[in-house]
Image 1 (cartoon, one colour):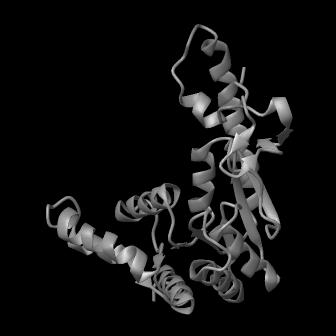
Image 2: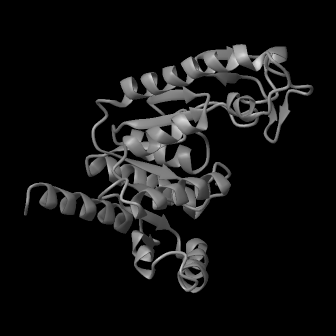
Length: 262
């Protein structure tokens, strides 16, 4: 059984609503651990023999529901960044403008559906009549889709959610963020580097935030032979939302030419 919260508190205050897949939990029903945490937890006894097979079915259902909801989405770009980004920050303004420009260029906008950068990109997309996809995740201290999402899906498991970010996107635009943002960034870089996905632009917004990381990859990782210097070309850095979208469009045009044999 799921463990329960003792305080019902999070970094943002009292947890009023908790989503576990399609199920809404409140009050004493709010668990202390997410489905992903319970899946990865060490078994405490023989009851895991009964629980894990059912988890497989839940995992399968998340893929089926995600595929069904997004199969007809059309071209889309995933936008990542911190949930802690303030509404009066330059990063928020960037994300909102990126959402608008992507829709005008013919894309849907996919985010994690939460606050901060995710809210801003969703707001920009929705403001010009576009599709703002929110891929929510079950977390004790970060629940709910922002008000601008017009196509939302809740996930129990991170790996099912992460598959949707890549499978239904033609590229990533990454704004300043924390561990979750870095996780998505480096996973996408690995997929492109290994040829698992093709014609997949990765744009980093903010020279002031990302240049130090890119310099470290060049001076330490590439110099040590852990990656090729050529791999550094897999990312582009800009301070201009219009340039970020232009880079995405450049990749789409290149892919179209190559697919047509041009």
